[in-house]
Length: 332
Image (cartoon, rainbow, N blue to C red; front, side, top):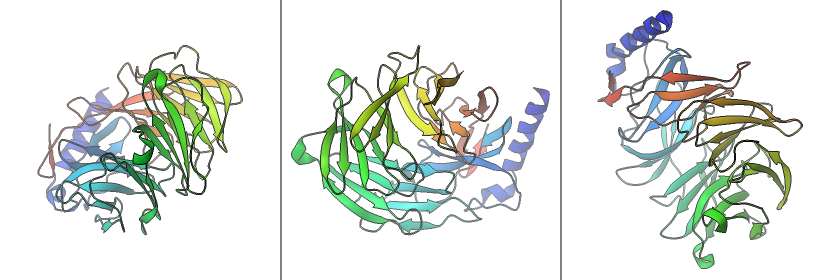
């Protein structure tokens, strides 16, 4: 513990160096970056700096405008954001020494939700008042609206979303509780209901695929392929504890399923549940960071940010002090 404490002090000292007070997030001091996180209170994206056991949430990057909402693809080094000033949708690169901001061609302003595809090559924008969906492809460098769909004529209000990497398939959860259902939106075939059992679904497409994994409130796991679900198994002991998110291993052979009660389950279709980790916390997300086996499971708040490393022989939870972002610097 003493080594970790001293390492953290060293990282904090570096963050207070004048180089970190510059407008951009570049610095002459080389500090490893684990990934990126959106800080809603600061209306900014902030790097997670250091190494596991000696990391801290760093100063906010200067995008040139306050960020109202963001969806971040850490491994691809960019974020798709909405400006709090003009509500326009833009992309921001998160690599090199300067942030590069680009507008997304033909995207409407003020989306209520942004959902990235598994590999960050496509994104779904949802506009609740208009009852409309826009699908963006060409991320991150040539982002433009590829598809637009109206949901208003169907009188449905999505509560969950997923989009494939090519942008041609989207999934929506509609309704709530026992009345919820999963709908498939195919760019060529239109929308139809997938006949799933259960309720309160979370789902994700596999990378570079139209296949998707779906988990219901009873922790039953399904494979959705060409509109047809097949039952793969169930994570025993995870009944009625609210699945939150799904991610995939780097080789795409296993799925990581996060539950709101603090458990992360590694599921292998061949053998069932392989491993389980617990953070004794309330999980709000399962967001991939730079390392494909490292995930963020909580948001920036007054409490430390929590990460889980699934690469260890036993999955391990790591805490990262978040500090408080003020004028591009951190106060502890």
